[in-house]
Length: 256
Image (cartoon, rainbow, N blue to C red):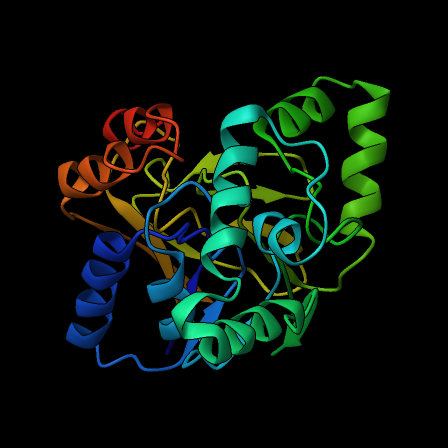
């Protein structure tokens, strides 16, 4: 068994709760789909822990910190700028240089056991969203949605794991969209069929469930784990940093 995590977003309390849950399942093999940083108050601590993961992919926030931010709203952009400042020079210049080098070296994609793993989508690994809206539109015969999903499904042979939207779900080739709750937190992939599996977000869920979310990968079976953590504590830390917008804390508390 192994764990697939995504979108930790500099949230140590959420990650520590997930790490404890992983330990209870004797899982040490961890794959991250990116966005270690952004929004949250503890980018340094999360990067240091992520260096121990077996696989780390690049998310759009990670990319923005080491290169240039493009297309971010004001709240996300201020967090990226603060994160970049936190990882540049200072008293821990050598360690920060190592952290920035780590972020810069993150892979865009990874293939394993017949699966493609990316942050956003196979077409645009760090930036493209695969949304419920796409699946519903394709199911209703909207040409643009059908073209988009058919193109995405054509990029992989079996399974594709993504994060980025922060909303856990499964989309199949018939354009059916199912949340992890509708699936009762467990899904078994049929052989010969293709699926997009969104693993949700550890550090900033957006499905109105404030609990951290990740997936246990056990052969063809996938289990979403929802883990309680100290949301209030992380929100308090965000509000305590003038460089971070309070809305980032509000979202954590609301699960949006």
